[in-house]
Image (cartoon, rainbow over the protein chains, first blue to last red):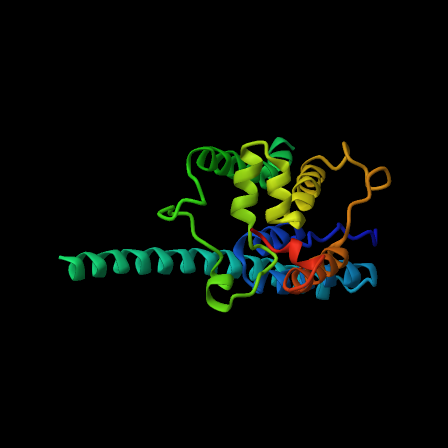
Length: 90
Length: 135
């Protein structure tokens, strides 16, 4: 049996992208897990590495969805302000 | 086999499409305009602190207008990160074209240090660190 394990994707690109564009600390958590993937895989702990890879992916997604949620809230807030201003100004 | 290659290239293709869309939007929308619909950084709006992503929109806007100096002023880490991220995506899409030995790219641990130090530094209120803050 061949013991060569296929490399486990650490999803680092997504973690960096959400950190630089989502302004949320969640992206940092994703990078921490991405770093764990490589060191665990290097130590031969493939199940743990896969688990860290899944978590890195999850935190990147959580960060991306939080950004979408915050933008929706922000747009609602701006619209409410505009509405309030229009009502008060009238 | 073709399906496998496509699967491997999907992230790079997806980011390329997103990047082209962002470029098109930023060519026409001005993030400096007070009634711009582009969102400001929520972290900075809520806490007054600069996060690693603060200035990213303005940096991309500057890059879309070929203004590297302004982009660097807004978010130097983003300017440095973009070509590295592009190479990481290309390597994932075509591992044979970019062998690890010829082109070593920073690993997750280096990125973590860079981002954490950059975030702390750009919030320090004295020179030279204040130049790392956007604006």
